[in-house]
Length: 514
Image 1 (cartoon, rainbow, N blue to C red):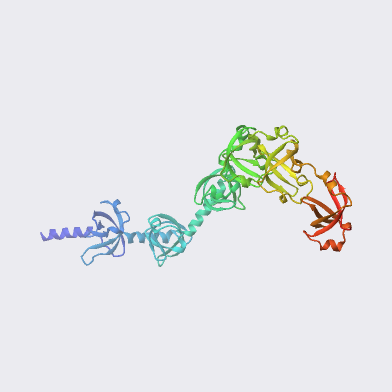
Image 2: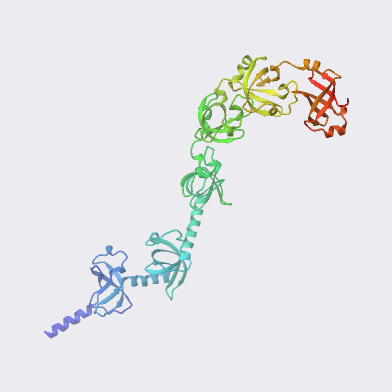
């Protein structure tokens, strides 16, 4: 019996392997618990591997073969302790030692963040990725870890089993590859998607995926825009058209408005001359306003087409941005992309009936609307304006500026002297409402008579004096002593002699030499 038992023990012993701590052995999973994986490596007892050493424990199965490292043949509890991760690490270093060199590209997974960088799993080996070489700017640790990336081997010490990686170099390589591919694919007229990288006053820079292109403000919209931010925003994804590119200088010109049809193509058919349209004022200039009458279509309402009045108007005082107005199309120039508009054409031309309504000799009323150095503008019916020249304001008084006798907004009565429809001009008079007093003046102030006068103004050619209210005369410089003339000031009294009365010219000449 003892002999048989001895034979059985010898037979069992012959089936067992001799194992050594630190070596890698093949085994089969015998069981899986919540904390450990039990592995049979052909030893007298089964070994134990902590469950946390496996990246995906749920994928393990009984009967599955794997390689483990023998850590301890018999621990304090008499158990065989194995390690899956160390076996993987050892095999990884063997592969690294055989296949890798500095500068090579490898795949790895970031497993955790540590002080100064990250730990990366490469073939089961823990490599170090310094923060300065990570190229993970703007990403959280949650977004970085448990993801696979490509790295460049920055430094490797095979004896010390020390491996340092660089993601920054890899990113640079990837960018260069993407750039090279993009330049190879780029063609004029090609549509590409990009992201708005930055905005300036003259346009926006679009990242096409490694190559930046310029979307100029003039190529953003068929409509008028004042700033690129009205159309695009930083971070916005959009489709653009490649207008031109220069690979040698790394320049790409892009277009956005060219993606859609040019609205000017059918502008002539859509907006024939004499048609009425409504539009929004999008720009105001001293010479007129720009009116958007359709998407991407703007016309100019010139200041001369705002009203039938001859006097130029100031558009900046009449309109504001966003106003909606009705206009009439005068002309469309498709090639120059110009449309001429008019407001006054929507109304009856008051000048057509002006000659019949304002015949010479007619007395009318109006309001003073403005001045020039030589006259005053008076608004009549139908918005027409006439002018009263300074020479037609008084029979006797010398008027240097119309504001000496008239005020803006003042209602006055005037006489129509003439109407020129072609020149759109109405001539008015104020003094003509009264009879010409010069016949009586000649009788009252005969040549040779002496009168008391009041100095009105000194000039280079003489002294103007007032004989009576609104009756002025000129003391010629030859008719007064220079010293005496220089001492005179407005309001001074001066005795003069009448030496000339010109009834036709409406002038009186006097002398201070009695």
